[in-house]
Image (tube, rainbow, N blue to C red; front, side, top):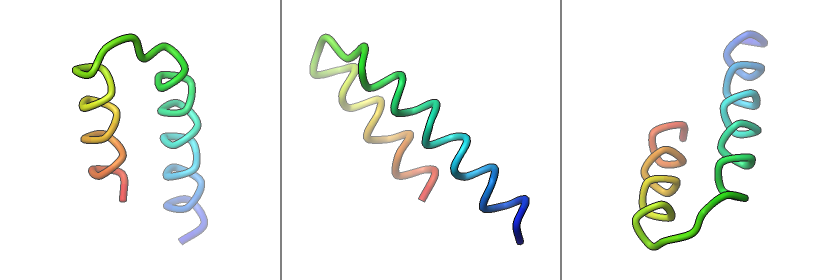
Length: 39
């Protein structure tokens, strides 16, 4: 269970960095899709 939680946290941290680079609506939509996949 701990590994699953750790993996999810790592993916969310990577997504956070990707969201800082959002410059268009398409980029935002991509980040939203990735976030939904993680959850």
